[in-house]
Image (tube, rainbow, N blue to C red; front, side):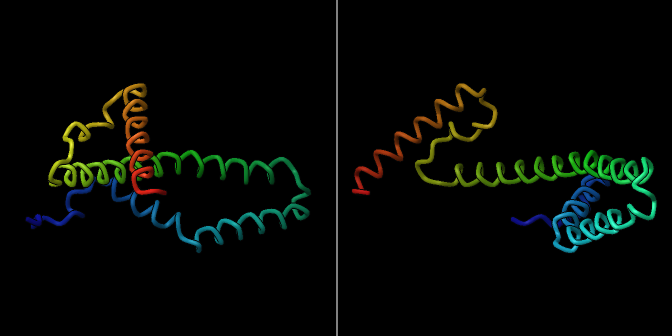
Length: 133
């Protein structure tokens, strides 16, 4: 049953800001804007004599933007991963014969997760052999 609440109403300020920023940052227009800024900065070099302040402007700007984007992108990836995990868990629960032990694989340590992956690789290899591929 679908919820009557709007998903937008359930977002925190940071989540909304993060989603909008990540969406905006991923557009081609944003890339071309950044490229234009860099070209203008580079072309202005002779005007400023390629001095330290001229270099500091781009270094500081790119450092700040990069630093902030790390958190925006990580937040976006965390939300996307969590939502996908919930959807996959729902599919596992609803599939007849599915192994419920797979529901919390993301909670396993690296060694146990690798062992589980190796099990599934063996199953895939056997399935390919049975099908003659």
